[in-house]
Image (cartoon, rainbow, N blue to C red; front, side, top):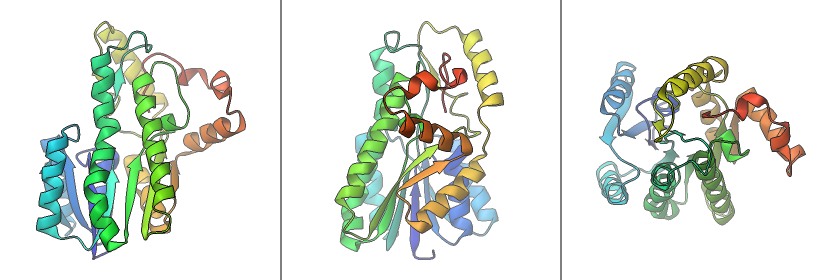
Length: 275
């Protein structure tokens, strides 16, 4: 992987950090981005301590102009011969039902979780097409395969990431570019803890829900997720499911496509849950 640059968003924690470290350990050059300056520095130091190659950049993927500026700089400065673009950055939202969700919160999440993926891909795809090689790895979710109550914004964005990825797979299938959509189940990240809390949500109930959810549902580590994603990239897999829970729910959705939601475990349909 010495000739490969991994460009990873959301690299300051969770799956993004674990994948950055793993890619560097395998000899790739890592360009790590995040809004979390402290987390990004932690990622950098872990890679440096393992004698890996890393450059870090603060980047807000909800900012279209910032993405353009970053991409222009990265392509000119690092001149990557092969790009693995990992669109991992994402946020969560506690908001209740769709009727209860303020539109500004819905749009805030969509701008990061969906449009961040689209904009990053738009900026780097021309170079990848010119090189006729590389990988686009888009982090969706098991909630991009099944829709659950109280996660209208999150599910809409993650279904959008899956749909966008599927279109790219079709359009790029005769090129040297591989496209993967990634669908994690419960991963031990801070997305639930760091989720935005909409107006009207009881903070005490949110805290209790978050603690219970992180204890019961987040069963896989970011390091495990990174290993699965890396193997998927190396094999050119078009869809990467992470965790037994994701595989079971995927089977449920394919077996009962019209009414799977009636058969979901109750824990997945309680208020204020995020994968």
